[in-house]
Every structure is written in structure tokens, then in C-alpha cells.
Image 1 (tube, rainbow, N blue to C red):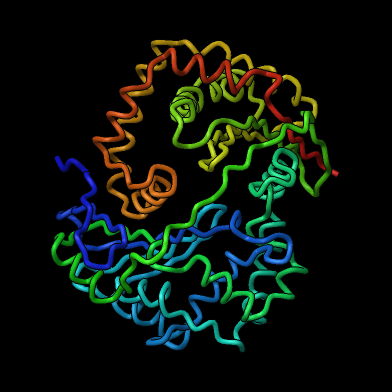
Image 2: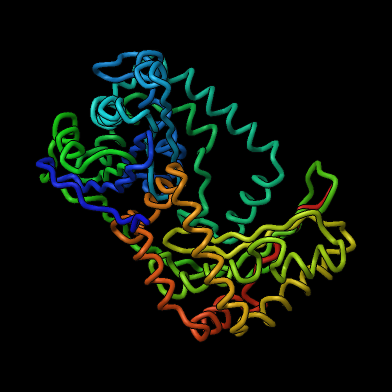
Length: 410
């Protein structure tokens, strides 16, 4: 079995680059992570600029001066490219058949180093983003999450909307966009990830061929901004829906802290599939919901969240059940051991999906400085004890620390 270990790729550009060599794959996946996101914007005048730049960088580059040429270079060989922006990073990535690995690396280098930002594409792309906003606002899951984030974080940068503010977007100029790019799009602020059937020496050769050398600037350093508790614990609002969307959220520690990792494991303990206590108590025994989900957002301040759709009259009962499941299982050694076994098996299956590996590795790069391989993850998880779980739950998931976001039918 492969050890699923990332190796650092020696290269003369000074850009941190890592390879997960998977010789059984017929493809190569690659990503460039830019340490630039919504938290780096000057608000409100730059609201949504990081995401807008992601869109516009894909509209053309020095060698591929149109979106069609840029995408076609990858798509004509059966590959694809994607891009995503969140609070603390922007990522450009894709996948191609193994014999076209060089093309993918070339395209990614073009996007982050030689973007054109054509003047005649800006207003059109802003219009596309406005349509993206409308699509998200039609999703009750997005609406409740957006309201929850604003309620908890307020004026903190993590309370912003990644897509920005429509009024600010309409005022953006090419100069504004290029100024933001010059602050964040430089080699020392990049990390390169490669996954698949590609040898280390060839990976280094491709990186040196297409990427501009760094070593002249420091990576983006962000000040740590503490969350101020506004003391509010419940928000109710109305939306055009047919059931209540209840979200319970609690701010927790940052992604690199052990308590955060303990809570991630606890999240799996109480909600990992049909056999989980939350699913059993709320759906199987009582039929109070169709589905429910738990999630931990991995940012400089984490959020532990539980989302469920229910009837209005079931709201208080479900909240009580959730809090009871948390309290009853925080020190369950049997559930703790079973969950570790299940997570290890699930992780092995996940390492068969290059897209999943890229997304996880990108998170690791931002919050741990480098991608974490399978063996490192197992070691990290092995260091977590049931006492760590109990302490983290008592510290962060006490009933009075949860915020209730309740979206009601009109």
C-alpha cells in the first residue's frame, strides 16, 4: 500500500511545491494556492475583489489571450480546470491525462503570473458574479449560513460575504483589480501541489520551466483578529421555504490547534452516517427530520455547526436532543474507538479521489504550512485522547456557547 506521503519538490523557483506520487493513476492533478482571500480585502471598497480577480484571471493570459484559448488548451485533451475563492485563499487547479501533465502546469503558471484582466471583460464578468449571487440567494442552505456568519462574526473579516457587495463590485476598476493582484499574486505567496503519476524530477523540471522565481518577498502575513462575543444567542428570520432550517453554531479554536482537531473527531463521533447518535436520536427513533449535517469550518476561527430541516413545532425538541447527544457522547470510549477505526477506513477511500486530496491538501497548506499525508494524519489522530475530546466539548460546545439561527417559513 502507498504511504500517501507528500514529498517536497526540489526546484530553483523557491516556490514551495509538493508531490503526492500515485503511480496507479492515469492522470495528474495540480493546484496553485494563492494566500489571498476575502479577509485580505479593504472593506467595503474592495468587497468581493478577491473572488472577482479569480474570475477575471481566467479570462485570458499572455500566451492564451482569451478564455476560450485558455480553457481549450486543457479541455481539448480531456482535462479540466477549476478555481475557487474563500476567506483565506484562492486556488486554481485541474486534472489532465498523465501524458499532458506539462500542459496543466503551464496553464496554472500562466493564470497566476501572466493574467491580462482585459478591460472589456470586467463589466461582463461582474454581471456573471451578480447572477452567481442570485443563484446562491435562492438556496436556503446558503441564506441560513450567510445570516449565521453575519450574526456571529459581525464586523470581523470572517463575517464578510465572499462574493462581496453588489454596489462595491459595480465600482471596481481595472486599476483596483491590478492593485489587489500586485499585493497578493507573487511567487512567494504561492504553493504548488501535484498529485498523480508524475515523477519528482519531471515535476521539478516543469515548475522551473513555467513558474517565475520567487525569493524577493515574504508570504502574506495576516494579523490575528480576535472575535468579540456580541452576547446574542438567537436569530430568527423568515424566508420563502416550507420547513424550519435550524442551525446551531459555536465558535471554536483555530484549525491548527489540538482542540479543533479533537472537535473534528467528535464531529465524526456524533454524526458520521446512519449509525451515528444524532441520526439515530433525531431521525430513526423520532422521525423528526429527513437529514441533518454537521460541519467544522477550518479558518483562523473555527465554527462547529449542526444544520437540520424540521417542522416549526419540533424546533425546541430537536435543540434539546442535539445538546443531549453532545453531552452523552463526549466521553464515550467505545464510540471514540469505533470512530477512529471508521475514519481511518474512510480516509483510505478518500485517497482514491485526487480532487478530494487537492482540496484537503490546500487547507493543510494554509493552516499547517504544508500538505499532510495519510501517515501524518493517522499519527495526528492517534495523539488525540478521549480526554482531549471531553475538554474541547466542555470548553467550546457548552449549551450557552451555541448560537441558534432559525429560518422560518413565511
